[in-house]
View 1 (cartoon, rainbow, N blue to C red):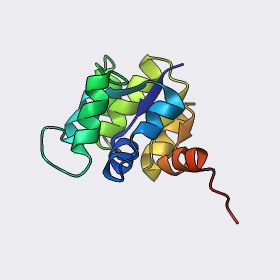
View 2 (view 1 turned 135 degrees about the horizontal axis):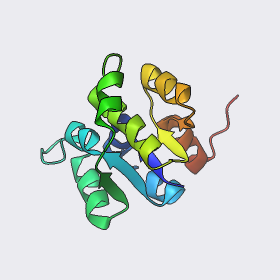
View 3 (view 1 turned 45 degrees about the vertical axis):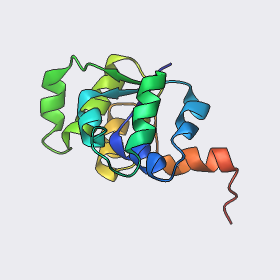
Length: 131
């Protein structure tokens, strides 16, 4: 099943040089256009090169969202990236949505989507033990 990501999991991992954790854990990750815009990959910002490399390698894929009315409705409470990520996850019947923001996670869960944040991805890779 596809995995869809919002901006922050990708950006946060890219900034610390660990964006490949997403590829290692999920193989392919889909993002909507609004998330691509929020990543600002054409600018020379921390993490931008890692994101560009992931897109060029093909494992970070941009997908068009066809559920515009749903996106508009969700934008009452969420930013466009979160709204499009949730709509895309529903559109492709995603097995998982990567999202860190509390309101976005709550909205995704209300749509019966399975949600994880970047900290879980990092823990899985580094086998971090919680006390």
